[in-house]
Image (cartoon, rainbow, N blue to C red; front, side, top):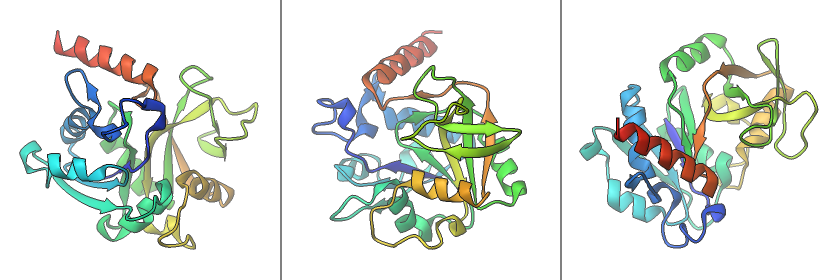
Amino acid sequence: MAILAGGLATRLRPLTGKIPKLLVEVAGEPFFAHQLRLLKAAGLRRVVLCVGHLGEQIVERYGDGSRWGVRIDYSLDGDKLLGTGGALIRALPKLGEAFYVLYGDSYLPIDYRAVGEFFLHCGQPGLMTVFENRGRYDRSNVWFEDGAIRAYDKRTPLPQMQHIDYGLGLFRPAAFDGCPRDAAVDLAEVQKSLVARHQLAGYDIRQRFYEIGSPAGLNELDQLLRAKDST
């Protein structure tokens, strides 16, 4: 499992002025604590954390993950931010032959094993989980039809785009063949390229996603987790 947590989190400022997004408090704990708990319950106990801006604070606080019952390795952007795709490319030697990719602001209470098994049997180098959003939680950016991704574009929506990138992907290293190393690469552009080659499988998720990438999303997840703790 790779977690992409190297961005500047500008939408959450001033909260993220001095701490990385993973350490923003949600329901009385850093968001990363909730994310790790969720992944561990799903049987995912090895995490490669792709970090950049203020990432040393996460390393100092969470170390190798043993206190949380998981193993955490780190892949650091270095002197320049590499973007979501570039960070993954740098982390490839630590990720093995097939791996999950989760955004560092996503909270996804789903059946990870079922998605992983689907990916292993689909034979494609990449998979995107999608949700029939219809513009409800953010702008829809995926044309998903008859079980296949027809188009994906965050910048130029099409009328047929009623789904949204759910926040969890799976990849084999071959998905990044031809991409530059140690350079800024956007994962969305890699995924668009895979769609154009009919090499990005789609997996339709029926339950909604949660995220802390925006103040509204942060507040909503905070309320959800506090309600869970009180039951």
